[in-house]
Amino acid sequence: MTKKILIVDDEVGITRMLKRNLEATGRFTVRTENSSVAAVTAAREFLPDFILLDVMMPGMDGGEVAAKIKEDKALSHVPVVFLSAIVKKEETEATGGKIGGSTFLAKPVKLEDLIACIETHIGK
Amino acid sequence: MKVAKSKNESAPSQTAIVRKENWLADWLQPNRSRAIILSVIIFLFIVAVGGLVFETGGTGFAWLHLMYLPIILAAAVFRLGGGIIAALVAGLALGPHMPLDVAKGLHQTPSNWIFRVVFFLLVGVFSGLMSNFLNWQIRRLKETNQRLFHAHEELKSAQMKLIQTAKLESIGRLAAGVAHEVKNPLAVIQLGVDYLKNTRTENTSEDTVETVQLMGDAVQRADTVIKGLLNFSRSEPLALVPLDLNTVIEDSLLLVKHELVKNHIALEKQLAGNLSKVELDQNKVKQVFINMFMNAIQAMGGNGTLSVKTSLQSGDVTEQNPSGKIVVLEIADTGAGIPEDKLDKLFEPFFTTKPVGSGTGLGLSVSRNIIEMHRGSITIGNRKQVRGAIVTITFPVPNPKPL
Image (cartoon, rainbow over all chains, first blue to last red):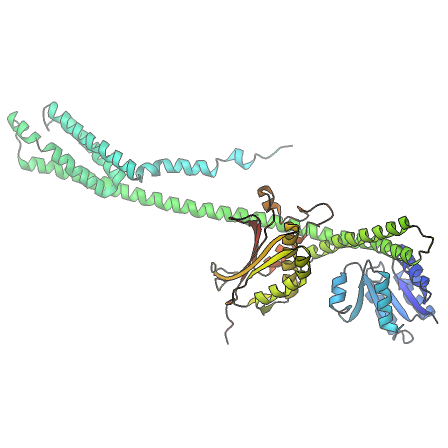
């Protein structure tokens, strides 16, 4: 059974490429959302196993979206990982991927790193 | 539009002012050879006036008053002592006139002569005291001038630093913005490359595989530049811990060991055993050291010696360094060295001597920022006796904390 991944990023190219890459593995079903405001509704409808959130987005930033998702009882257990252009790859490695209690992936993320991160959170 | 006159056009240069002021000071404070010449001139002047008085008929004539001139001159140049000596010499020069005056029927007694000598002495002493006072004033003016000159230089240097800081800050802000904007398209390309790699089939040509590989490498290179920009733009607070510098150096050397071996570079260590602990942010300082080691390795090409030396030295006691002690690290290579005209540009952001694509030009400016945040200093120059460059990094030794 494939795992459900929700990806939220205002950059259409990134969500499209992530979806294409992850689905090509045959292990994931991916839903993408380019609006942070619509992300919470999308999460409620899709009930993902894993959420990948861009940090800097117009409207609401990734942190605010994550807080709203965590408030929802049906979604509070879903791991949320942030994707950021500001954080560096070395920093995510040095801190075991966690900064201030949250897990971060640095852009440009390599597919193998993303899959490893997903596996860490929801298993293979 | 009205253009303001440049500073050089509107005001005489500092050198010209100093030169003008020195003209008078040079004559009033003569050096040894000039003092000898002046002494001879004054002596000859006294003898000449003595001769003139003798020739023109004795001390009763007005020419006698000319004798005051060499006395005043001697006092001006040699101050109080000079004035007194010149007055006594002038008095002696008039001695032989007494028999002549008597022969001419002029009424002359030794007391007349003594009277004249006393007058000479009075003029000598008074002029000497004036000269002493003038000299003291000149010295004071010179000192004030020196202080003003130094203050001006310090002000100029502080202004330059301020401009540089403002420039770096705006570059930093720009860099962070650019980094963010460039990372998103880079992420798309990276994911595209990953997709193409993962979906290739047996029918995919070698050219296509190579093209995708080259694209991936290019993304990594661009990402390295962006990381440099982010490093440069950040000024996070330091996590300072008292550490032994030698240990941090050893740890950093371990990380470049592979590069040393690969490039056949010998390592020469002279780590002092008596180093005081210094307050360091280990990760940041390591980043600087690795940067310096890698620069040295790259500068040497494929053979050479990397020298790493530490020492404890005495520096100036300043607000930045209250203990007055510094720990010094010297990293020297045996490469070609740095062209003299490039030395003062090394720490400028985006300046690099490496081939295009090999360096971001930010490593040294980031390193300097880190070292300066530690209240230390970093300088780069060429080695004196042998070929190669040398980097000198200092850290202040903190005062021991009271129990």
